[in-house]
Every structure is written in C-alpha cells, then in structure tokens.
Image (cartoon, rainbow, N blue to C red; front, side, top):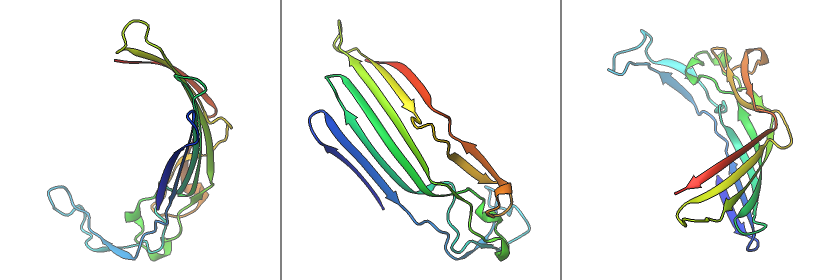
Length: 184
C-alpha cells in the first residue's frame, strides 16, 4: 500500500507526506532451472527445489515514511526539509541458493534508519534575457549526522542471519552541497 499527499497550507507553505507499507515474503517452494540465453541448460541439475516459504524479500525497505515541507519566505526562494524513515529492511541474498530446507531462515533485518535532509535555493531574477534563468541551490544531507546501513548483502550461499556473513555499506556523515543552475 502506498499513499502520497501534497497539501498547500498557505501561499508560501506546502506539506508533503508519503507512506509505503509492504509485507513482501516469498511464497511456497519453487523449482530452479538455470539456462543460457539460447535455452540450453546451464547446469546438469534440473528441477532443483528452492525453499523460500515465508522468507522476507531482501534489498528494499518494506516500510517507508516521509514527511516534508516546502516554505517560500519570499519570491524565488525556498527551503525544503524532508524527514525519511526506513523500516522492515532485510539484507539482500540470492534466492536461488536456498536449496536446503535447513538453510531457509529469515534474512537479517536491518535496524530502522532515519534521515533528515534540508534543501534550499533561490532563483535569480533575469537581468537581460527572460528565457535564461539562473539559480543557486544548497543542501545539507544527513543533518542529524546519523549513521545507518544503505546496502547490506549476504556473502554466504544462503539467507542466514549470521552477522559474520554480512557485507554492509553505510551512509555518509553530514554533507553540504552548493550548486549553480542555468535554465534556457
């Protein structure tokens, strides 16, 4: 289920919100047949059982919550804070490797992550040509300087939740960016 809303509060203030709720699990036992592009078998194994029943799908946050504002203090300028929460995020694994019912365990569930970004900008009023517009943009990413996983995968040939077998990547710390833009 997904829902996204944008609501004007006043001429200068807009509220944005989004929610995405999921419960993605593999269903049942499947049979694996690997082939090359020409249709020939990739291995001598045919109809290999793959045991995934009830295992959560990895590599994507199943629940996401976002809240943001866009405020225009004066014409041409804006500030836009955005707060995002990811939950029910499971480590990536290769489903085709779960060939033994004993290794069909829950994938590692990552801790909930939270992130606050603030974007701001100003569109400069054209001085000569009305068709050419310039702007200045700036962002502060990860304002609260929180560390969280951005990607986690399993180095094992299973979906084990063992922490020793996970490979993880973290976000950056607080980051500032500034840029100029031109529109023709």
